[in-house]
Image 1 (cartoon, rainbow, N blue to C red):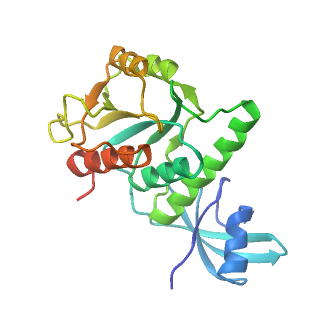
Image 2: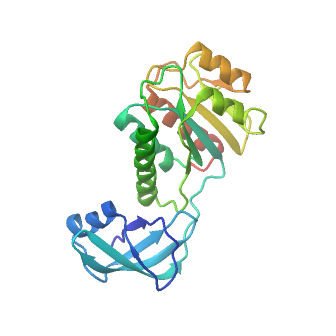
Length: 245
C-alpha cells in the first residue's frame, strides 16, 4: 500500500492533530477517497518524517493525527547547488522549480534579468512566491525529500551577483560560448548556477556575472530553452559531482 506523503508547514510532534493544507486534503478526500484512520507520512521540511493517520474529514477540512517519528532516508545531495533562474512565464517556471527540486537543488533564487518578460508588482510577487512554495513542497512530497530547498524572493540579477561575489563556491553561468564543461569542472561540493529567462541573458547580464566571478558553462552544440537548459545542467553536475549514478 502506497502511503501518501504530505508537507505540513507546522511543528509536528506525536499526539498532535494538525489540519492538512487545503489542496492536499482535497486530494486525499476527493481523489483518493481515503477515510478516517488511513495511514499518512507527514514532514515539515526540517528533515524529519512522522507516521500519521487521518483523524477527521469535515467538508473541505481534513485533519491528521501525528503518531510517531519514523526513520527517514537522507535524500539531500552532497553537492549543494544554488540555482539562480531567470523568471520564466507561467507553467515553464513551475516546471523548472518542480524538476530542480527533484534533482536535488539546495536553493533557488528567481532572478529579474535584463530580458525578463514577467513583471511582478509587490502584491503579485507575494502571490507568485506562495504558489512557487507550493510547487516546491509538492515536488518534495513526490520525490521523497524531507528538506525543502530554500526559495528566495525574486531579486535583480545585479543585486544577487553582488551578494555572491567573493564566495568559495564555484560560480557558473550557462553560456553556449562558455570555456568550461561539466566534465572539465574541478571537483566541488558547493556550486552556484545562473540561467537566463526565455530571451536569454543580455550582454550586460553576462558582464555583471563575469565581474562577480561566474564562468561560462557550455552544455553542448545545441541551444536549449530555459526550461531545459538549467535542468540539463543540474542533472550533469549531479551525475558528475553529486549523487546521481
